Length: 88
Image (cartoon, rainbow, N blue to C red; front, side, top):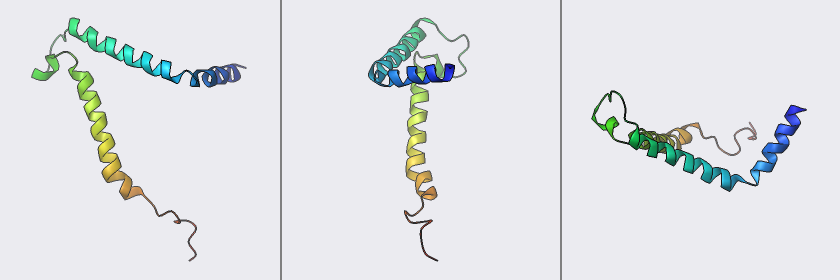
């Protein structure tokens, strides 16, 4: 019962994905804006005292991980298209 109603709700939300995306962006922006007024208690090094540092750090880390995975790891794991269909 719950599983079916949750599935129907999620299916209905799929058509509203643009609204959910912008709501998430607005929420993350509010968190960065709140960081301007709420300062870290004890910054561990110089840069983390700046507002929004951890947001930029996380985004930069994610971009770097995607680039490394796409350029280095994916070619190492790639298989030919007919890997399992070849006649031996």
